[in-house]
Length: 95
Image 1 (cartoon, rainbow, N blue to C red):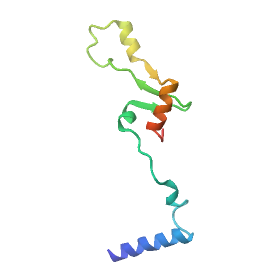
Image 2: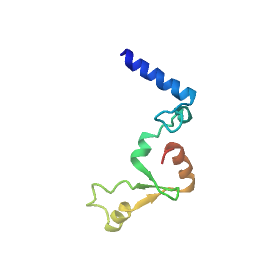
Image 3: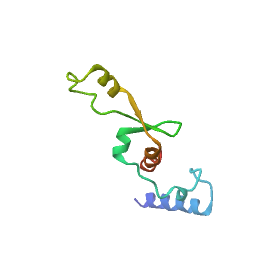
């Protein structure tokens, strides 16, 4: 236990004094970390052009009473609009 504490102290000393360490940048530049919204992570995924995509609801079951065209439309991918994209960027800060 004492050796572990001494190792952490020496690592902190090297970081503060600017000596060589195993880190490429200081850990202080990354705080505070932003949290992604859990429900948004499960439902949306980001695209390289800045938009987001999601699946449409109502396609998984109870399809016997739905018209074939409706089932096809529900199976298509839905994309975010401009006002949604700005909100989604705040909910998913890391994409």
